[in-house]
Amino acid sequence: MRPLADMPRDEAARIDALLFDLDDTVLTHGRLSRGAYDAICDLAAAGLTLVAVTGRPAGWGELVARQWPVEGVVAENGAVLLYRQGEGITRKLRHEGPMLDAARRRLEHVVALVKHAVPEIELADDNAARLTDVTFDVGERHKLPPDRVAKARATILAAGARAMLSSVHLHASFEGDDKASGAFRMMLWRKALDPAAARIRCAYVGDSENDAACFAAFATTVGVANIAPWVHRLSMPPRYVTQGAMGAGFAELASKLLAGRARHA
Ligand SMILES: [Mg+2]
Image 1 (cartoon, helix red, strand yellow):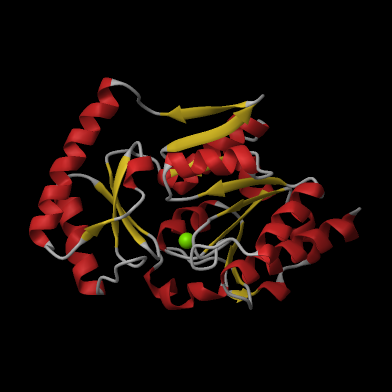
Image 2 (cartoon, helix red, strand yellow):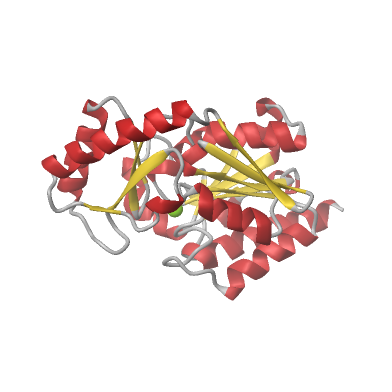
């Protein structure tokens, strides 16, 4: 990873969409700071397309899509897309109805297996707002040691589900999407950008393991400073890293992109 300050002006100037993770990237320990929200508003006012790309539930994503100046939200690690249409919200999933119900029943079985393997594990407190996955709390209200997280993850995989890890959560899902495939679908539907164009014109900023798919997929990728302890576990690190952590790092990136556009104009 190189310091964000090393990003060439030309690279900053060609970015016209910023895709961002929420927890520990825009949000600082779960809170939205004034500095981070000001940065979002400044980017929107400058004409950048903004998309939140999060492991958080569809129900949370709907709130962000309704209230923030964003094009849309990719929620549940790519499985659910949400965007405003008029005064309403459009929600896109791969499956709805009976197939979704069947997946939920299979996830209940996965929960039973994980609880048997790791009895002290707790479910996250946001599962009621989820549609496609089930999520365990490994670092938000309950801290689970890495070896126990590894055991829970292995149990999820052995059950035939996918496992995704963020700084706070371990997710289990039968969906095939990840943050990158969800982000590409969003840019195609909302901005008519095919993945090749999106790869060059979007920047992605995140902080943890479930962001690695986007770090691999997009050309301009940034980690906020708190990514450092995780970076050896990423299949692909971001190209740049901010000096500031979490929301402060996000605001630093926003300033860099806005300066790039100002020089380009
Ligand atoms: Mg995060």
